[in-house]
Image 1 (cartoon, one colour):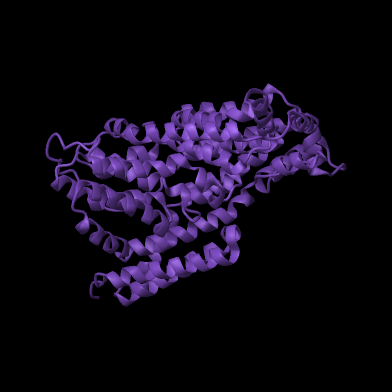
Image 2: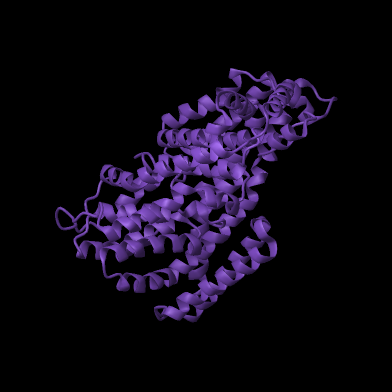
Length: 499
């Protein structure tokens, strides 16, 4: 059997053209509902087309099939986290955890400060947990729910959650991508050096974001105090608001501090809420099961299973409360998982056939100045988030591809690692079919298109990096020649607990 032929530029471009065409058609026809299934179909059709080009170049059916399976396998840890978060949202609603956070939040935070406080708190929690996914899937859900009660814009609230969560994720050595990227870049770079250099873009980006959120909060009218009081009264009627309801949240924080795997931490917290719910919210549990013939134990067990599997349904009789807290369940994440699997299948085939590497080669060759080289890294990371649909592909390939050029020009390795994070990691959440965009949109219940304009941190970080590159600010020379240490030769499996 002869070796496969290297792809031509046309070979690499054709699947991208097909993908863009199908995505544009899908979004044009279905709008924000495209993620309910049509986008997934477009991604799988694009993967099939990329497979045909790979076959033409001499790749066997088995090789392409193995690549697709490997791409899906790499997402399994993310899939389990998605399912756990779905269960957590269902049981936290049933146990009154999320309603209690919302109730306490609207007591303590005025509408004028809400967006600012949301971003600041999520930044702190992100630094403690080291995971933007955990932050968004827990407190983020509560903050978005709080915005609805206060009559504020849930898309802006989602943007504030994302800004804070991603800043916190980047400013801690506990984050998987913050650990991974310096290893990919090599050159003797440590995680501490990487984090210290990231602050020069992440700090100003968050600072500007907080100012904007403060202005947006000051200009937001929100509901009248009477409407807020009515919502709080409805909350009190539907749930027993008590500090005991926060025990599942406290357990999650403890497990995170003990560095337990995110899947086990989230699922454990979800199970604890299911066990506590019959003791703390018996009336809500009975109304949810709606079967008077059952005994107390049977009702409690059925409620726990149902909340984790298909989500909790509130029966308070007050429509805004019922709409807000009738959510969750593993089943609610299946469409998001479908989207993730479709995106990673396409990405895996594109990389295995050499298409992605072929697309990056001309970008590296045309980058003459330091500013244009950094801009090339940024554009590659953003482009790969769109094309490949996964932040780890968008981190690994630019780090590997641009490493030699940065070393040849004597640029410090932390400049490359910062550019990789400011593009590959930070912008992943802005793409609906990306694993991060699909996850965040699914757990917050806000479409990517709606929250994207308010993700100021995620939009500003890559822009600041490019500006620094052209003006020469914080773009130092390497203190010594890069080491011969080589980065990993392939895209790693998704770590247990996404960035």
